[in-house]
Amino acid sequence: RWLFNQAVCTLYAFCGVLFGLCSLTSLTVLSTVCCLKVCYPAYVLLLCVWAYALIFATAPLAEWGSYGPEPYGTACCITWKASSREATLYILALFIFCYLLPCFLILVSYSLILWTVRVSRRAIRQH
Image (cartoon, rainbow, N blue to C red):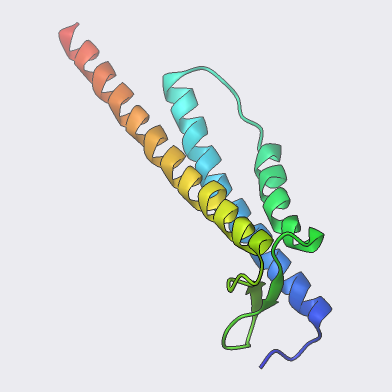
């Protein structure tokens, strides 16, 4: 069972969500930066990664979603069993903006990198 109080549970869950989202968002930004460096000259700030993750991680602290014990009670995370419309919308937003969108951007970025490298290789072979 969870050994600490609800405040520690919320802090633990908040940190787990924040760092998890920062990890996935960092991978998304890194793939996008690689794509931009290979395909287009541009810069992306890592501060955006933390701001993006912080928005979704603090949402349950602002009563949009919630943190609580996991089903086995040994750790805390997002309360996935939505008890309200707002909690359902938070989980849906989290799924779309923190999973689907990053995965899509990673796939598109690396596809564009592979396409650019392939086109460059053909151009070099022709010369």
